[in-house]
Length: 315
Length: 256
Image (cartoon, rainbow over all chains, first blue to last red; front, side):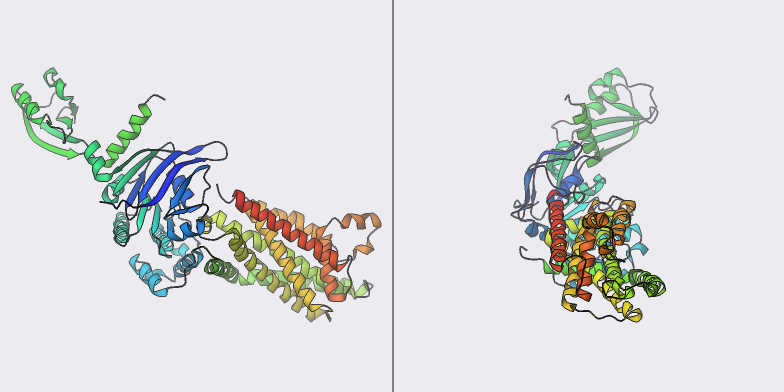
């Protein structure tokens, strides 16, 4: 459960790039203090633009953003000193050592040197042994860790992670998830964008879906799963069938695996799932099955459903 | 944080200086070697057969111009690469997202660029003493001119670095504009030696005022008055500074 105190308040934010591309269209969104918020959206939806505006990298065309009580443009020093950013691209100073570049970031954000904090940070990210290595000598995954260390070097209250686990292996992804959870426990608000919907499902308290520069849904992750999640019943048939008998039309079944399986999609939260009546009707029709299994739709299914639903809507 | 981000300025300044230290040989040896060759060729081989210019031996006459030549090219080069490289590598995101004002960012970048250029200028001056007997009449003015020129052209270099979208453009301004202007700016001659028409044309070359002022600090004589030299240099400084403030206000080629 997330706290209800807003740490970021975005109001009517718009961005039109030179050339006329509308990246953000009247976006309003509130991020609560201490929560993990996942921003989902297809490529070009406006995720990175939104983050870049809040961090000061892109200038908005319209609207306001208040971070920790301060306007990001008028009081940019106050807001930026509280914000850390891990960018999507692996942009690093290739010839610098790990320790030097992390110390540089801390200084850049106005903090006095703190060797003990930096050492702990590098140890937490398994970078301490590599502290003297030049960044260009590191693997992609290690470079990603360096970017996280740089973003955390000034002890921010708000952390933006733009596709943090893109291109990293499973082990590192798990490490990062643990790190993010640890930061949340320390009160850091985390906003992440990701293509790995599994990541949002696993970590986020709330999910926002952005498409064509507009926020189309903001919901608690658990609630969205409850509200939009579907369950699926798979019945392995005793004898394969070429078509679904007309007597089963009421259940809108699908036939898969070359006629060996029947799929029934249902809403687990509805009063009647329709399963008992389906099984009775199958028995009446003499259709036997050898096995049955149920599964729950993932956030990815929900996301794809949402986006495709919007695409089908008339303009 | 709402006051001056001194830690940020210092971090960025040190970062820029460290980048130069990594290429110390390239940063120092190149300009020193090139200038030494100028001294050997123009000061020794050719200069010994030339008359005095304005009462000064030719070898000594070209010293201020040669220092100014290096100072200009180094300041523009350092100033431009300092901001161009993070744009090129993508690390500019960190500078733009840091709690630093435009003036703080400029102070760090231009400060580091000017420091490097001044060090090179002083090394070239020291190198010159191996070839020529030098007697600097106005050492404080000389230092002031050195600093003013280094800062002014580091600012100009910063503009070039922001404007440049590739390495070719980065080299375009120093190579095709600044070097010709410097050579035609009286580094190797007094503009009094030119026909009156070309002398008048030369007065539109800003480098003339720099070289002249710098030479005045050495020998008490220049092509134009020291006040005019200082005025034109200061004008260029404020012009460059205003352009950079405009760059940060509009985000031109820095922010999308």
